[in-house]
Length: 162
Image (tube, rainbow, N blue to C red; front, side):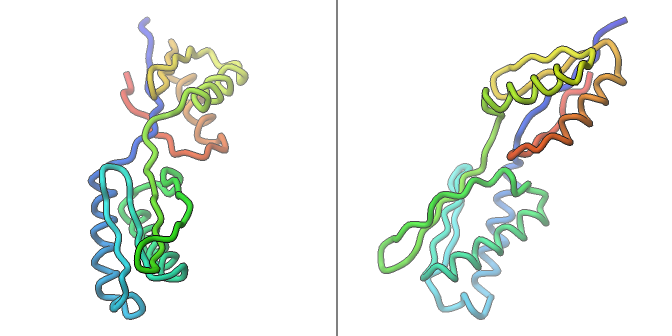
């Protein structure tokens, strides 16, 4: 009997993030409290930069972005918020980065959790993903359930079922 496996990854679909940012831009342009302000949002790679007149408007723009991300299926756990800082012209800027991949230390916590549950599954850390393999599909399903129940501060997806 052959081994079955799957990969645990942490990815965000860049197109969905871009759509969420575009929808946020449109709402900023039409919303009454933000209409005549210097509020803006832009996407560069996986970094979103929020620029606003003051702290209240910055929070409003971030709230709009979060609601649009939820609608587009972008997990909020993937967004890492930088510190709001003063920018030119009395405005406030905040950089929000979108996390991709699983860091080594966080991958170790997942593999240790799977091993401590005494599942008959092997784990391997490969770059920014984790491969879980077993001779039994049932063991893999138990591993998926276990990882979903872990209190992780980043989103995980399960891909490459074999």
